[in-house]
Each structure stands twice: as structure tokens, then as C-alpha cells.
Length: 201
Image (cartoon, rainbow, N blue to C red; front, side, top):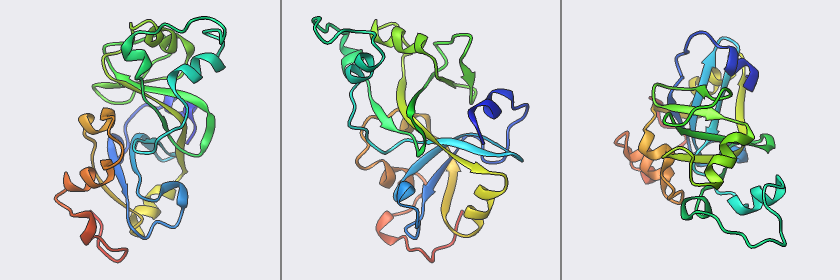
């Protein structure tokens, strides 16, 4: 599923607003030990973002790359902007940035992905964040994850993923290191006891 399909969707699918939690037998290294927030699911496929994979770039690096600030100028950013998290959202369009955020910020290009969470992929939100005027809760993700029609359903049926309702606190939690374990714990599962042969939820 593409971003344009997300913009034009009319109804939510079964996996909308769900977490996918990779099973230990996940063969694709892009998704090993990942937690993915599904933003859209329909007969056309699905798309979402890995929410526990760090990115080496900083928000200052992003601003420099976009020419919003100059290297030779003193860089003075609000504390929230200096600490703003950048993550790896998935292998598709990995050079493109997306901001997943609370619904207290909206522009003409913002797309609601749940009752409380929006997605914005334009420079206006980056400018707002750099001035300390962005959404209360947000994270930037480089790239996204997508599945063709029927692909995600097959992967879940073949024990590739556990699924559960998404937790907003976990989506925006900046502690990525143990987010996989905490997502499983939210389902009452101890990661150490999981095996590739376990059943799926």
C-alpha cells in the first residue's frame, strides 16, 4: 500500500490501529524484533511504521539537510526540538521523512490515522517543531513499511506476527531499547518464552 492510498482510504481495515510484533522466526532482517504501528489496512494492502528502530540522524541533521538552518550559523533550537526523536520507519522510501503525532497539530496535509493520531509528511510540521510550536507528542520516521494486497494477512496466518491493539504511550515512548519486550508484556507475554513455533493472537 502506498501513501497516496492512505490519503484516499474510505474505511478502516481489520489491522488498522494495531501493533504488529515480530515473532522470533521472522526471516526478514528489516523486521526482526520490530514493533510496527499499522496506520492503514484495506483490500489494497497495508502500511505502517516501525516504532522501535533507532536512526543515527538527529533532528539538527534533518534541518541542515533541508536547508532550514545553515551550517555556519549558530544553531539555536528549543529543547524539545534538540531532543526530537528520529527513527527508522521501514525500508520503503527510506530517505523520506514522516511525522507521526498527536492530533493537537494539523495542517492541510495532515492525515488522521486514528481518533488521536495523525500523520504529516510535509515541511510545515518540521518548521513548527524546529520553533517549538509542533504537536505535543510526535516522532519522525524515515521510510515506512508496506504490504501488497493479502500479504500481511498471509504473514500473520503463517505465524510471522503477533497482533494487538496499539498503545499510544508506546508509540511515542522514546526508550526504544526494550520497546519490543514491553509490547509483548502488554499482551501478557514474556519475550524469553516466545518461540518461532508459538501460536499467534
